[in-house]
Image (cartoon, rainbow, N blue to C red; front, side):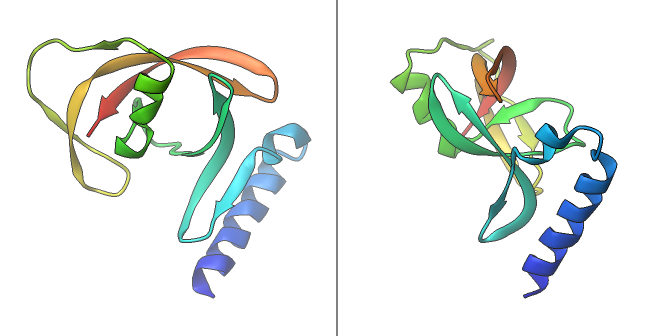
Length: 118
């Protein structure tokens, strides 16, 4: 119940802030088991839900999304060094490298550089 209420409060705040831009709010989706904001988008035509972390310094492709690299023959670039980063859930994740992700939101395609983590 508290998760649903916090989601509704967050969505109300976003709707109020972006009222002049109604298309923005239509991309946010609720994740049943997570009160954080998610956005609906496509990567190479595959619809996914991605965590919308407005405080992130970099886009992260986590372990649940690594299948996209193989499925769409995306190039994973590694610098050969082993290092870790902390994600939105506070956990340390091993960095595998970087990958260019062709994302589509509301019909607009943009290639973004993401860090792939395991």
